[in-house]
Image (cartoon, rainbow, N blue to C red; front, side, top):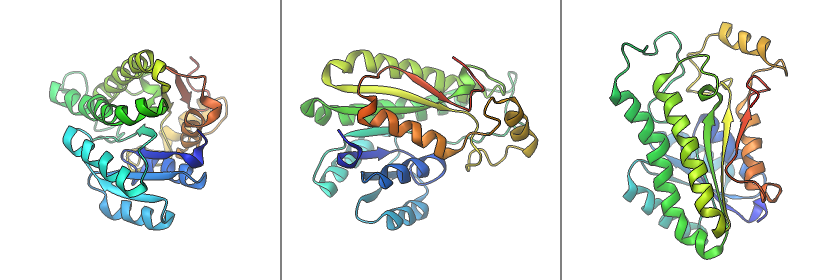
Length: 253
């Protein structure tokens, strides 16, 4: 299915990487559902910027009922079911290498918060999408990972672990849903310059990444959004269960 025929849900779509993904799909003519949890003002501003091809819907992705209601509302608004799900939302986390918890201080509740945002949220959106995707024999599910679980330069224990678990979720879903015409893939960016979540990162850290990267640049949200478009586009029809690392070559898998 060409991008301009798709109805795309972007969780956490009001700011940061999610905002860039929303804009990238909108520029291709897709209809976009901007999911937000607390960023109502930013979501509505983005919706107004895009126009009639966008709708902003509040839902906590960790809440199964709220997610189900969001899918119903989106289908009613566009008179077409969601075809493409981008699991991007990041719950309660900032990339702050100075104040992060170390191996002694981290507690299970920290892990649980990130696991619920990454894995539980993706489970809720996937299960809400499945009836219409199976009926259409078509669907695109894309999760947002990180290069840090392959090379934990900064040991964000809770975040890195949740994204590693999300890759397992991605590949298991890809295995089962392929026969239904549904692809499931992951896009893993490096530390992005700059989003709300990475705003606590110092210039020195960004300079170190730039110097260590073959492309001699820090990855931008636009770089990652473009990779997401690939998996959603007809060019990605033959790809499922993959993790595409978009970090300028810093991590080579």
